[in-house]
Image 1 (cartoon, rainbow, N blue to C red):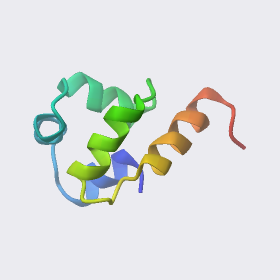
Image 2 (cartoon, rainbow, N blue to C red):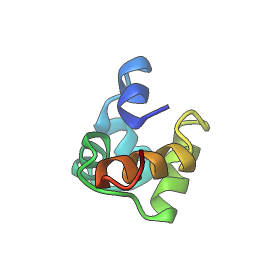
Image 3 (spheres, rainbow, N blue to C red):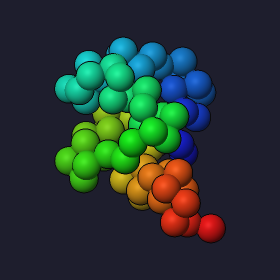
Image 4 (cartoon, rainbow, N blue to C red):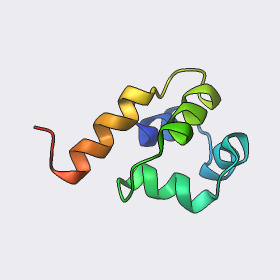
Length: 71
């Protein structure tokens, strides 16, 4: 599941997720928009905070897709 899907389908706000993860709200919104890729540590924190609904693999695929490296 993408981060955007998670936020939409769970009615979670970027603010609430950022508080759970321990990062800035802008970091979550940039990740959701595909404007940046997460560090491994951040991706792991997001996976834990979303109870595994958004996995490290999901975040990696999204990062590759936005960089143009994935088909």
